[in-house]
Length: 257
Image (tube, rainbow, N blue to C red):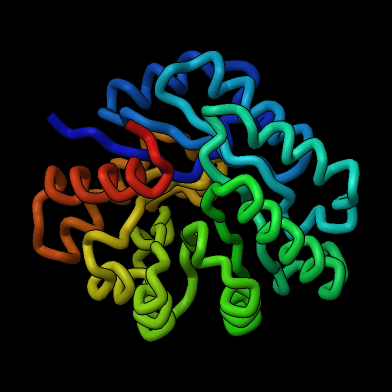
C-alpha cells in the first residue's frame, strides 16, 4: 500500500474554505496519509494548528514568511513560541528569504529569519526554509546561526543540483514540488536525479504550483502523487519506492510516529 506525505501544504489558505472536507477526502483517496500545513503569518499559523487538532493525519508548522517579515516582533514571537508548544506542531516555518518579490526589506527579512532560527533552537523543532533568489545568503545564515542543530528542509527547492549536494553534505533535506513535472524543468529534474533518496521529501505547496496535469488550477494534496510519479520516472524507480522513502524521511524528520 502506498502512503504519501505532503510535507508542505496550505489547507489553512482561504482558497480551501468552501470545500475543505472534499479536498481532504480526495487526498485520502489518492493515498495521501499525512499532510503538513505550514503557516506564513500569525493567523495562518493558528489555523494550521486548528486543522492539526481536528484531523488526526494533519500536522502544523508555525512561522512568518519573508513577505511578512515586517510584521515580526516580540509579540508575534511569543505567539509562535506558544503555538509551538502544541504536540502537533512539528516545525518552525516557513521562514527564510525572498529576494524575488522583496515584499519586506532585505534587512528586515534577515532579522526575522535569524530570530526564527533562534526560536526553533529554543523549542527544539526543525526549520522549513523558503528560499527564492537568495540561495547564497540563505545558506550563509543557516550555517552562521548553526541551524543544523535542529534540522533543515529547503522546501520547493529551486537551486541547482550542485547546491542541493552541498546542502546534503551539511545534513539538510530537499523537498520537491510541482515544478519538477513541468516540461521545461531542468534544474528540478537534475536535483531529483542526484539527491540521495534518504534526504528527499515531496510536497504540493498547495494551493500554489500545481503539477503539469493541473497547472494553472488550484493545487491540493491529492496532487502530490504526480510529484512522486515524476521523481520515480526520473530515477527509474517505482512510485511505491519513492512514496515509501519520502514518507519515512518526513516522518523521521518531523518526529511523527
